[in-house]
Image (cartoon, rainbow, N blue to C red; front, top):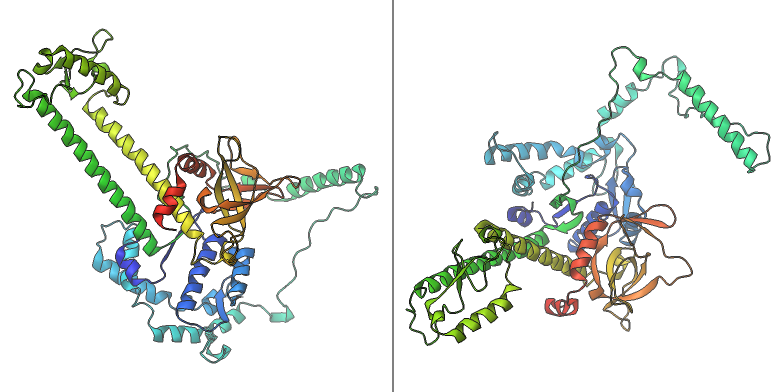
Length: 521
């Protein structure tokens, strides 16, 4: 998804996935923060005017507050005017032309392009599709020059075409008023009484019935197909990369991919070493099975046994169900050196009992052995991913980030308290102490919601009479920033709450302080 070529050529590359698959205020805020870093890097004089359309995400409080704090002025263009007022719309032709040309050179028509291929093409054309002279020309076409705003430089043919769409013949002017609404007359009852609202409800039902009879029913129109609602098929619940929502810089994506790939390579290496160790173990037993040939004072095969059914060599009796005889464990062959010394045989029996609890006795065959190792690898992957996610959360709370950028964001934290059982809490940052020299720089002041017990992803606000603000050590904060949306006045919906709970179950009981020190915060 982030090829090295794209990360190298596209400075300030930001990759974002959203909950609904379309841009929202969260992704917009992440983009504006990256834009602010770009302005600071280029030493651009503030204030800066930002041309934008009227998407609902532009009116979010957090977005507007951030723009105001960074001295960025957002100008929203009127509806249906982006073709005339948006600078990017003047350059789209160049972008599509360069993209199609590079795509035809790199891939054939038979290739099915994925996100990585798209990013490779975009990274290759990034420095060519919008040269400086084209940007200056496009800005002039929307009335923006280096010294002033001039409407005469805009596309006059667009204004002429718009004027012809307005019918002013016969003195008829386009209506600018909204149609009148159907109103419900106030009943002759005492206002706000039970009879008053009952009468209004009955009148509203009558009005709904009246409008329904007057309206055209779609099913009555000949030849018009009606909408058939089909219940979607239930699919197996899986977690995909695109279900992980948020933003990340391209270079950070490469770093995380490298960490994960190194971990997988190490796990494959360990797996091969275990496999090689089993083969060597079998060779040692077969060498001394009938007669000790190792030349050691104590035979190397004295602690090994061989199953009479599957012929696997191991330290404990074989526990495969396919090897059992009449419900009992199979006969195990011992090395020749064992039969010469009963004391050594006793040693085998004792160590077999000790090893039996730690060795998997439920392997069905060699494929089952591999499946168990794969399950263990998957468990290790979950632990490593949880550890990486927790470290990324700590980084998001640490300098160079500023305290103003953290206030109001939601995080997940571990609360131990007096009880041995730990609790998952969801809270919002109210103070970070980065600007306070005498403050606890390793702590975050947070306002928490009530703990969630049971299923669901909606949490209740903490009642007024209970304490809800406390200082939390940074090592007890395990995930975030989170997407939390209010549901009424006292309820909040936490996106991906089940995934947060799974993450909490992994990291709650590990030594987070040691990890915090080793990482070097």
